[in-house]
Length: 150
Image (cartoon, rainbow, N blue to C red; front, side, top):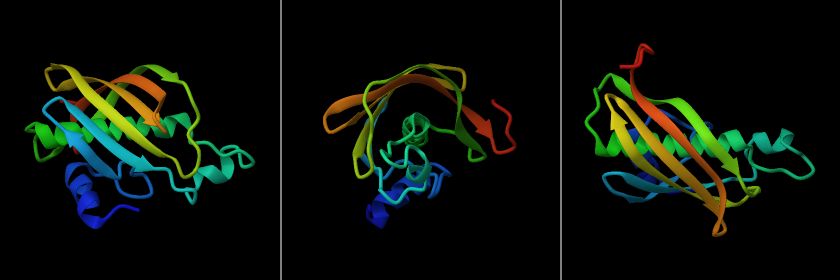
């Protein structure tokens, strides 16, 4: 598990909390790029039902780790309203290449490609053990706490 200072940095950036937090640590951050880590703990509940005899991380969890990393990037590098949160509004061009197993640590790299109004268009890659496991493109918009995109 990660230490509290690393988790507090994540908690300060996005509203997600365990058991639905898929970012453990920020490794690198710049104006338009973030690299994060997440250890896929063998105790995670989804392993019990996602191929119990050969557990793998569901693809949607890999996507969510990328989306959360993108939200951390926006929150840490941009001025957003105190009443707004970064929320995924579009995802596509998702490609899964390899499986992630219990105990693996994934490295998530997310880059902002373009900003249009309050929408950020991003691309992500996820790797494990030095090999690419997933790529995707997505958009994140600032959404007021009430749920309407700006």
